Length: 115
Image (cartoon, rainbow, N blue to C red):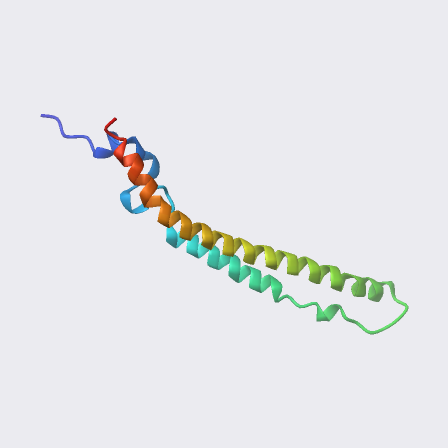
């Protein structure tokens, strides 16, 4: 008598989408870690200061150039910071929605395995 093959051979969905605990590959811990990283990096980028570019003096092209870079640099870091934090918020919303729907959608597919 030959050994019985694993049930995953008869259930192509489990081969594609993983185990019951991780139905469609959505791992809440990974999503949370990524969201936390994006939020942390957004805060770090947003905290970059450009006070060193505020210099006193006149007549130097270097001083003029330094003064000219402060506002655009601040605008760029604020934009990047906002984007990272917005991505973190969107990912958290996705996670909440996908965790809720993951089991119910996977169950529907499971019901079709015998067809």
